[in-house]
Length: 141
Image (cartoon, rainbow, N blue to C red; front, side):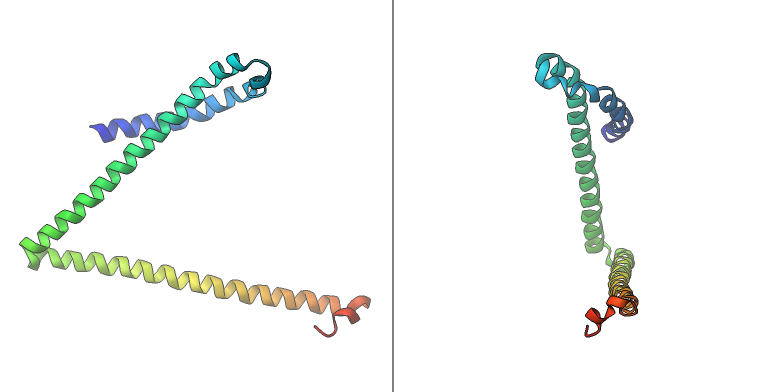
C-alpha cells in the first residue's frame, strides 16, 4: 500500500541522510570559490531533504485521515447502535480525561517543587555569604 511504501522510503532516507550530510560537509566552503561544483555536490543533499519533507507530509496526512475516519465511525456507531458504542466512547473519554488530569497534576507539582527548590537554594547561598567576612553587605536581605 501507499502508506507502507512511504514508511519504508522514509526510514531508508532517514538512515541515509546523515551519510549524505557528512559526505557533503566539506563542499560548503567551495560555494564561494567554485559555486557550480559545490551546487552539484550539494544536490543530493537538497533532493534528500525535499524527499524526506514530502514523506513526512504523506505520513502526517495519512495519520490524520486515519484518526478522522475512526472518529467518524465512532460517531456513526453511536448514532446507529448507542447501547454498544457509547460504552466504548465513555471509556475512551474517561481514559483521555484521566491522562490529561494526571499530566496537569504532574506539571503543577513540578512547578511547585521547582520554585520551592530555587528558594531553598537561594536561602542556603545567602546563608553561606552571610557567614563570610563580606556578609555584612547581605545582612539586610
